[in-house]
Amino acid sequence: MKKFKLSTFNIFMVYLAFLLGYFVYAGFAGSRLLGDDKEEYEPEGVRTHSGNSHHYRSYHK
Amino acid sequence: MIGAEVEVLEKLPETSSITCPKCSQELPCHTYAQARNIVCNKCDRIFEIREGGLLTVKQFEKYTLPPVLPLGAKGRLKGVPFTVVGFIVYQERDSHYRWREYVLFNPVQGYAYLSEFNGHWNFFQPIYDYSHGNNLHRSFVYEGATFNLFHRYYSKVVYASGEFFWNITSGSPFCTEYVAPPYIITRIKTEKQLTWLLGEYLEPELIKEAFGLQAEMPQQIGIGATEPLSGGLSFGKIKKISVIAALALLFLHLFFMIIARKEVISNTEFTFATAAAPPVQPGPETDPVTQSYLLSVNTSSAEQPPIVGPAFKLSTGLLGSSNMLVSLSAPVQNDWFATAITLRNTTTMQEYDFELGVEYYSGYEDGYSWSEGNHSTETLLSALPDGEYQTFIRPYQSQQNVPFFTLKLENDVPVWSNFWIILLLITAFPAIQYFREKNFEMRRWMNSDFSPYDQ
Image (cartoon, rainbow over the protein chains, first blue to last red):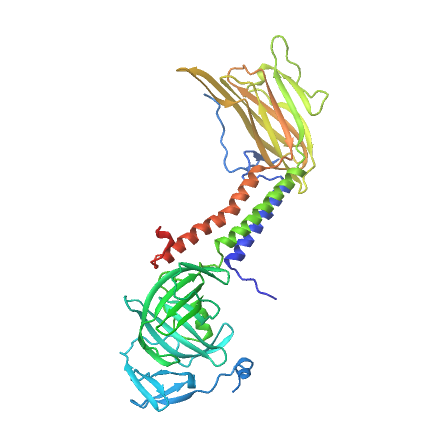
């Protein structure tokens, strides 16, 4: 059996496979890679946030 | 001994010996009748081998650095067993640059050479299927590779030991080097003949292993003329693979665009009551998708309870989740309008909160009309778990002069940002490799008088 060697080429191919695989997963799961600005509340009241950042906007001129 | 023994059994002939006529040192001789010069490694005299005996040609000055590959060392390179039969230190006639060459011998395959300069090694073998004669070419193609002129110089021998099949002290050969890393072709022109050698870069560790050397190999300095970029992955190759990956990504994205349902699950207009149209109890009307709500003007206040908006069910995601595009539009004019929205999963009671807001301002100043902002906005909710949901809406505004707003919920839409991010990450690798390779090549060609980067 041929041994897998960690060459730059193999790293690159694994990298591409990961990217395309993650794209397919995100496509089927309806995920947005950048996340979103929604906040999640668990039934017990625990708050989690799915986005990278969140800010309460003020629409005052 | 016959050739088959050398090739099949990998035997090399026994070594004969010649006695140095000056110091009586026994000199091993591997190449027998082919040897024309032999150098005594004790008294450093070079002799010409003649029928009548050895004729002294000259005596070298003592060379203090021992050869990395000792004379008589045996090793296999490119599948061929070789014996080291000669060691020569060359110097450019018109400069101080020196390099070392090891003459390798195999009774069937003939001669090959290992050249070492600044710790970089090349394995040379003669070629007979190419020549452009005495003409100076800046580049040429051989075996599909483009070789570019790298260096020209006259060489001279400053030290040698071992045996040689040519007269190593005659004249100063004119050498011209063409490189196509990891290959090099060297044209060696003497008064009597023209020789072409094809070389290939070898890692020092490979030579150390092939000859079973124990000592450390010479430290590498700078970038070798034929040294390949580490990792063995050229920009050209990486570019081809990346283009294929980008095309695969495009097809995948088209696939997701085709299967995306883009289902409008709610398109609701919320109207604030006026004197002409008094407020009624908010609630859904007959059409489950296109609904209307009539709200009290006081609804737009933080103290009021949220409006119970449309309910919907998500059961579409292959992996148990799907995205949702939420769009808000309101006819704001020099004003802003915003709403907080809660999606409550009535099965798990998990809640998702987010805000949407629009603002639009315009005017006329100093002879110019201007505007900024938008009447509509949207946000994409990522990976909402399947289930039944109830929306709660809490609008707020500053002057109570926005008559209505519209909220649209669209399930399972294609996400373009995913496509662009993955495409960016695919192209990042070749982009980095391009700059690495360019920088590497510029450093390589700094050692050449014919650098394409000087133009």
